[in-house]
Length: 93
Image (tube, rainbow, N blue to C red; front, side, top):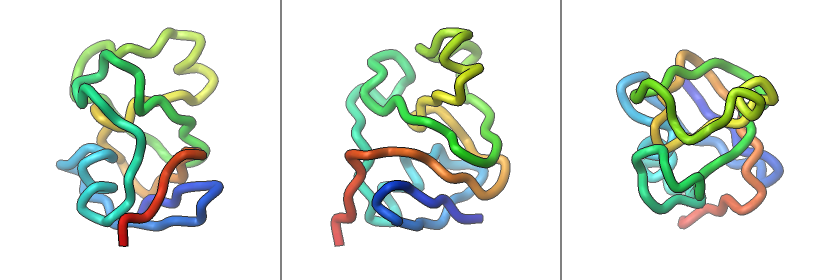
């Protein structure tokens, strides 16, 4: 499975048993993050395409934000290929 990050045009491999943030780190893509447990909202970004499931019951995203496509990649596991809108992402390679 693959994740695509816009607007930077980055791509990294994802695994269903890793969070999107863990997969990004392993793929050399730095996404904004801090707490890594779904509470601080530093990693908040938009899921443009694809589906995820959360590792925790109710992460720090409001119902309205969820409806608009906002997710927290630190606790989100992909269910297939995804496209994320993360303006401050960068490649560490």
